[in-house]
Structures are given as structure tokens and as C-alpha cells.
Amino acid sequence: MKITNEFDVGQSIESVWEFFGDIPQVAACLPGADLTDEIGDDHYQGVVAISAGPVKLEFDGDAKIVGRDEAAKTITVDANGADRKGRGNAVLALDAGLNAIPTGTKVDIAMDLQLSGAAAQYGRGLVNDVTTVLLEDFATNMQNRLAAIEAGLDPDAVEAVQPASGFAIALRAAKMALLRVFRRFFLPYSPEAV
Image (cartoon, rainbow, N blue to C red; front, side):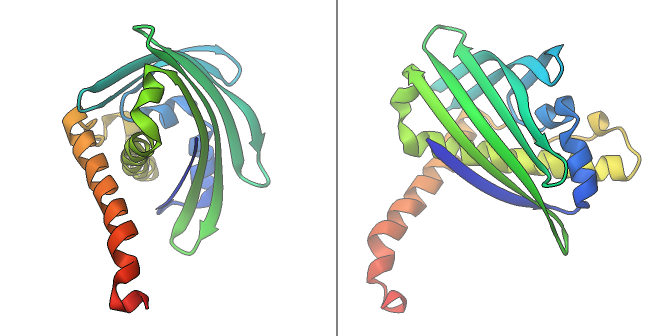
């Protein structure tokens, strides 16, 4: 399934590009991600734990940067993982691109996420909503770390957004789903839409 997202950060494109070159820094921004080993040039192993209400998945896997374009400010990552309880697998192809904007940098994310096994049962809507919630937290953490680096502080000492509990993620994802349904069924009939 294809998932896209974008967010803005207040730092220059050069600062953000340098940040994206430090994979442990980037991984530290994603709630539930724990980078455990560097196993080669631009190749890492780690764990990603995701919970949304009763859904709790922990993937052991690896991620490799397969493309980095300095001029275009794009990076491509391939990742895969297997659920620790053998309930499924995930394969991810991620492209991130940076664009300078007057207030800093716009970060565009495009993911192609393939789930199999129990993880695939939860449906596109739930997976998309949970991913959106995680990317919002990622963007906040990234902005906080970039601001700390810019201020000369240790980014690991800056308080990150607390990883949302499974219940909190489920509530935020449910809210997105309800808004989507509301828009689909009610907005086309509003007088403003005519």
C-alpha cells in the first residue's frame, strides 16, 4: 500500500539533509523504533514495535539506504522485518525528499508498505491511520532534535514526544477514520459544496 505524507521543519535544507545522513538520529525520531546494530555501510538492524489498541506487533528487521542523491536531496531506504511472534512480515520502500521553503524545509515522504500474515488483517485504513499518527510524532521529534542541534545541545538529552500508548494511537487513528467517513458522506451534500 502506498502512503504519502509531508511536513515542514524550521531548519535550512542543508541542516536537514545533514540530519538525514545520520541514520541513528533519524531512527531515534520514530516512536517504537530501536536501532540496534550497524551491519555495514548504510545498513542497519533494529526493532520496530507498533501498538494500536489490541494490535501489538514487534518486528525484527533491517534497513538499508539504497539511494542518496545529494543534488536532488532525496534518500531511498529499503527495509524488511518479521514479527517476533511469527505473525507476519513487513517490507517497506521509503523515499524522502527535501525542498527548501521560505520558513525552512519541506520533507516529503512516500512509502510502499507491504504486510503479510496477521499484520495484513488490520486493513488499509487502520494501517494508513496508524502510520500517519507515527509520522506526526516523527515530525515533532525531528523538529525538536534539529532545534537542539542548532542550539548546540545534545539532541539525545532533549525530551522527545513520548511514544503514544496503543490506546492513544488507536484513538487518534479512529478520529481520522471518523473524519474520513464524515467527509465522504456529508460534505458532498453541504450547500458550500454545490
